Length: 272
Picture 1 (cartoon, rainbow, N blue to C red):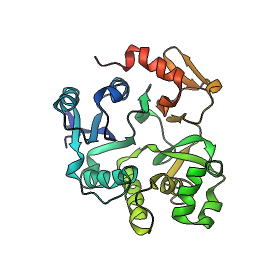
Picture 2 (cartoon, rainbow, N blue to C red; picture 1 turned 90 degrees about the horizontal axis):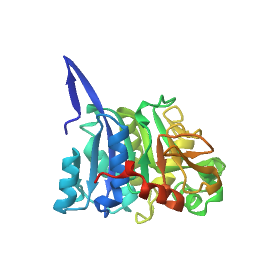
Picture 3 (cartoon, one colour; picture 1 turned 45 degrees about the vertical axis):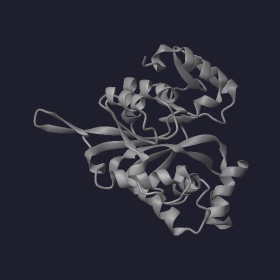
Picture 4 (cartoon, helix red, strand yellow; picture 1 turned 135 degrees about the vertical axis):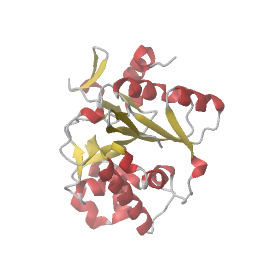
């Protein structure tokens, strides 16, 4: 994996955007790709994909996006949302030092309106916050109760849900995060077909390694808006603002009809 460029005698590490991009065609992820390339200079994008079509591969190749087919990874039998962490681990465990920072992210539901790597971080790994607390979400409560038990759940259930869809940090700390998720998945006797990755993610954010992981409650990098009421969302000057506030990364935008229409009409989300 090529991830560095030389400026004079100085070697500059790139930032990496890494995503599982399975069962999507290129048009599904066009807003993600277009906005990422526009907002993040000298970025390395890697897609782990199940798409073998020549069209998808060619479109990625033309934009210097590296694709790795999912068949190159061992299948551990987990739900795909959990399985991706083992793919990330295999891909990065001997390569992560080539990068300065790493963002792991969804694709179809994410777009960029700024550079997330340029935001100063007050923790080594930053998690995204949703607009609800854990105990008010049956599915998030279940992921934690069933995986960690009622005691851990009671300790963290009053906290804000953190979405495991987008996470950013320096390369070494992100490798620790990926290893932590894999460790918990492998050390717990649970139903592997359920996506417990977000339950583990919230445990890490609110309970474990508090000096390493931090949930972005102020939305300085991410704004995850799947549960955000429409009256808090505004589209102004070609930007999506939440409570009149700008965030570089908008996650779960596809759950709001007005933003879907904005993305559909805006040329900045188009490559063709």
